[in-house]
Image: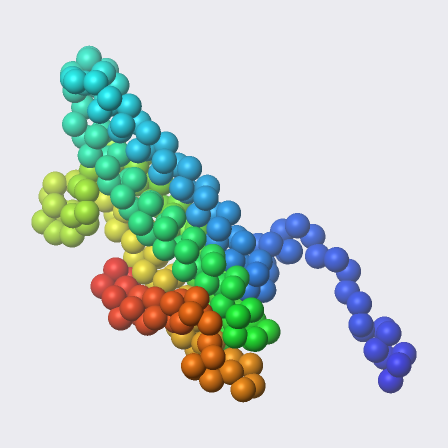
Length: 224
């Protein structure tokens, strides 16, 4: 028994790709959520900086076409890209996916999330959706519809692939959030430490649980 344990007790250290991109550990995925949200947050902040630079003085100084006329479509694209990225791919993933994944299992005494591999899937759906959200700004002149990601403006007012990318980005964000919410709810209800009743659960874990419940009820609108 001792020889068998010694023979199989150690594994080689995983490489960088396996360590981070294939991890199912809740701490690793929480860190990945925070780092990725910070990256897309920087892109979103660059957009709002560009908009505020334009608003700094009267008239149109920066958002111009090649012949020097004001480019209203570019303004609409910046507003749409900033709104989609900041809400669906920065704030929610960082606060819910990042801090929720990292801290909630620690606070309730769970070894990990209830569905570790689904946790990894949730993260990569978030990355795919955020990437499509960025592409929607640059493809076919960009998507400049604000929050109106539905017909008839999505079909006739914004032709091209940019609108499709924006809609699919929100779909992937919704799917990622739903999977994460199911994971959070299951972990909270079934993986608390022995003796930890609901009255003894820390308030932060409660807040993540309530948020997950609201996301599970609301986000099918986006994922469908």
